[in-house]
Image (tube, rainbow, N blue to C red; front, top):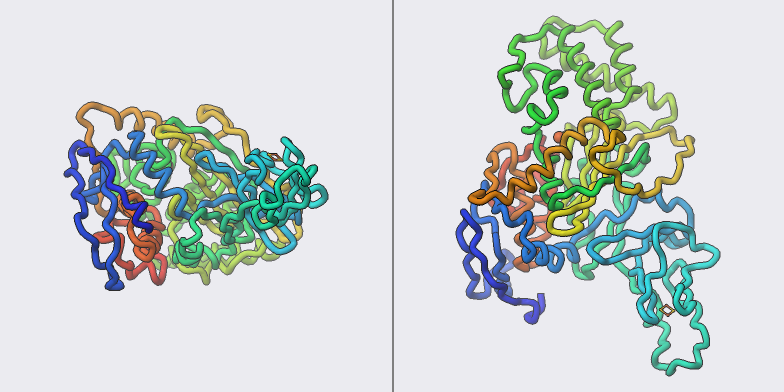
Length: 499
Ligand code: FES
Ligand SMILES: [Fe+2]
């Protein structure tokens, strides 16, 4: 962090939270080096179980995120299946910046979408540049797929020093790949992608996440802050009320939140438990139009006809799950699907957040996935992908970015539609006079607290080595607890998935 970047911003007192204290002097870090003082920021999270409401609508806070968070983090910019052939490119836009992600002969690269003459954007949407490269629509300068400037019309009218080749090439953006996606980062000094998103990446690698293909892809512009939208997917506590159809078929004995007045208390026998589980699979699969698929519950329906289950319920559950995993693995592999051995996979939660704006929801050989981008303090773009492991020889159409669909459109599956219906109400309610902060469950809504405090670290200008630790800690399964210190390496984060 250059000294010039260390500025003290005007402090605002968050209602219901203590005014942030200015860090008066340079601080010694874990490596013993003295570091520049942190910036003072408004609406800082000072109580980990209370999130100041203004963080979701205040223009100044939003501007700080635009300036200090987004340019320093790895953004999921494209699915690689959008650019399957050499020369294929796709544009990724966020917060007024446009990047071109292109598959070259030498790998996937990213460039600023800006002509080196007078800055005109070269490309919009998606296409293939193998034959023609990129041609600026203003004065016709040309670039090849590697970003090299190959043509300047009437070059003799420029002073030679204006045409230094290195300065004419498109500006590169850092681009690294993981999980079938290209991620970009505008910060030349940021830690590598994998370092930032471990262990999230390691949790999903055994599931062949890089082989997933888009079944369908939808997007919506939501009238909410980008964080409001994301947080609906960081806890399962809302299922009881927001998704009553799921709660009604929740399997007794597996609920983490207890029953409301309509809950079933009776212990099931083994057969009833299997029936409940299959109904649950179908309800989740139909409600998401993804995650659990018909090819999964059809196998479960077949299996229940033949399987012998022990009397003891605990043993019966284990017998059932191992047999179901075995059947799905074997049958899908027989169809040419690159299925992992489901019984050999470590336990994984059904919904995992990757800081700052990406989610994977693994279920058997399928996943749903979310990507969220801010469009203003109280508007965001929410994308939902249904991803499936298909037979390797099955040709899939190249996915195209969807035109946003209103959240009331019946095209949306029931479960995300229910989630979206709450969000505008929440965004409005956050403005209520006297509503000072969200109060979080210490044990179930901790992901929300943890990533907010990591955002604060970016806004304050914490040292890069601490931000990497915070980044890793912010990547978390649904229903994670509040961490005491998001800047300390988390023992669980370095190893197995903390389901
Ligand atoms: S701005 Fe691109 S050629 Fe002039
Ligand atoms: Fe939900």
